[in-house]
Image 1 (cartoon, rainbow, N blue to C red):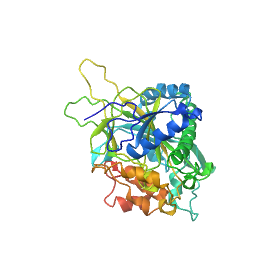
Image 2 (tube, rainbow, N blue to C red):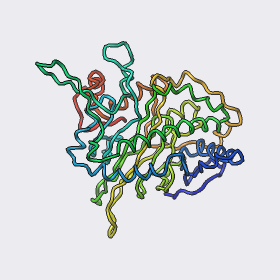
Image 3 (cartoon, rainbow, N blue to C red):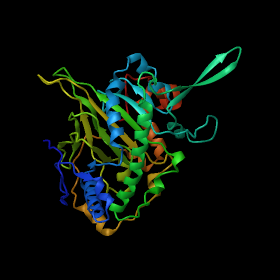
Image 4 (cartoon, rainbow, N blue to C red):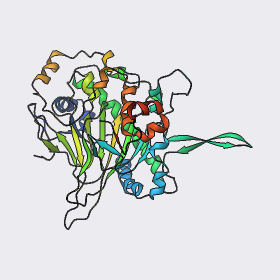
Length: 401
């Protein structure tokens, strides 16, 4: 079963067959803001996904990002390989098609991992958590050894050469800054929708200079073999608090699993972001905010139609690397807690649950996930963790779960 997105303001939480659309412009007036908050509360508790129309991100920057994506993936393979993720201890850079698995099956996607600007706090030899090294700038340090000059430190960017794709870096960094700001506003709106103070979730964030958020630019190539698997990325939950997804091409592909286990289409809607809840936010809200299983199907070639890949840009809002989710208990009004009771039970899904969140700091949970997903990076930059999780050596592809 599938259903296209439609406007949904129903308070019936038994199930859902569509993804609600929320208009951000309702927040501009005190007369319409309560309507937005009520719709947000419904989406968070009963669906775990929503479309956000009229987001506060410059339409010209969104259009420019979309325009750059085919140019980015059309770069010569040798140029993309120059910025492969394996060079970065921060897991930033390019990943070739088929480099990751979900539940043992290849994810048919090619991608660039890019983050908001950040200077890593980790220093080799200092007594600081290794997971601090997870975040850092989109550049790598290269030491050139010279018998005449001694060691010369150089920096190589994990961005494509500017001459090959002029203006891309500046445009994308500007886009990331705007989505980052939206994420912070949205988390305060979320708190308000649950009857909390707007700053109730600030505990889970550090000061700006200590925070970094991640994005991917993803290409799902066309599946031309009728018998081939069309898994773009398999069923999963996102790990963190919020994800803001720009669907950058007109293809369907994103699907969301409802309470009874049916897959619901979430097709691209121009002028919107798709926003979804991660497992960490579900955990800290005692299950009020619902993390929802989802997947992406790669486009299939159709007779008489031009074959084109699917493109998307997910932005993953992080929380503090040092935050432990069990150390902060949120006190919700009784009337809000009762809304969860009317939702019904979630059917079993094929997606993974992030059980480590009740045991380890957020940074360690995320580092372990990245090590499992990208063993080649771990082998080079995190040898002890690599040996722990890959005692038999480098596998053909990574799999976080």
